[in-house]
Length: 350
Image (cartoon, rainbow, N blue to C red; front, side):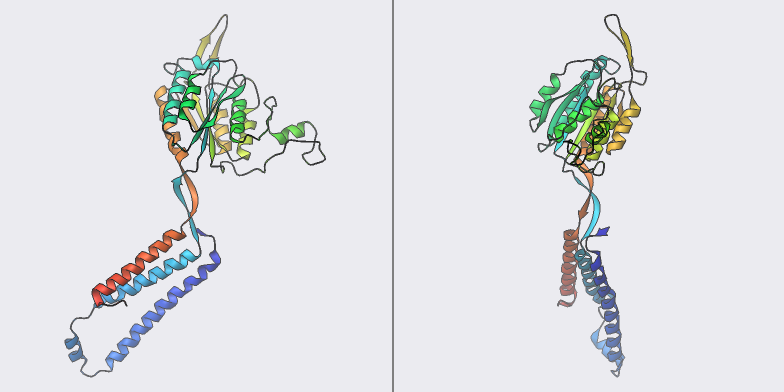
């Protein structure tokens, strides 16, 4: 627990002062009783005293006071709360290797089925966009609240050549930040890196460079996330690690999903053959850089389970939350309990 106004914690010193005062008053009361002669007769006339019960209301009042003084310092704590997530971008590989049937019925069909289930479980307040990537990347469905439009976009997937994972990340990032300018042909797509490569400064004297946002902590942008699904290695386009750094600088998490089996599969075409394998190391690096997480899916069942897990990760998150109102409410309950017990046992509010 931490406090927004820790300087006010000194007010808690009032609690031990009141405890000492209460003990002192009890001692003084005992001394005054001793002055009576025939103390045994007085006790017999009074009957059995209230005993421990007379201390309960004051103790509850002291606890209430201590709780209120803690609330004055505005305490905060980390709790699991519903996410403020409002946007999810599905970046999905549509390269020819997704024809492989090591994941039944094939990698593409399994990915589409899992994505449909994920979309169906999203709350109505979440906007969903779809990016496809192969040799290049395209935003096939801008972020929308309409699940029907998103499902229709997924049903229109067509196989294409090559795999540009970096382009998929960049176009997804641009869907979240429409004003963001990226160079899909650059090895390192980050604006700062492009300006350095061109030998220009990023200040006003270096021509007209692309403006950059001030970097933030990776994973700190909770209003959007990218889910990247692929089955192969990057063969063209920007460096996916550099693209991931660009997402990390804007705080956007990238959750990566690797589809396929450990050994991959040998695909055949007109006079050609190729083995498609998964670059798990790159996908782990992308997720780690951005504060996301990597998942491996070797079967269609595993892929569906991964999307179910992603749904919970996107709807709950740890957040630093002020709990002043919670403590104030607890103090009010303690005060009411003290007053109620006092009325019940002694017919007065002590």
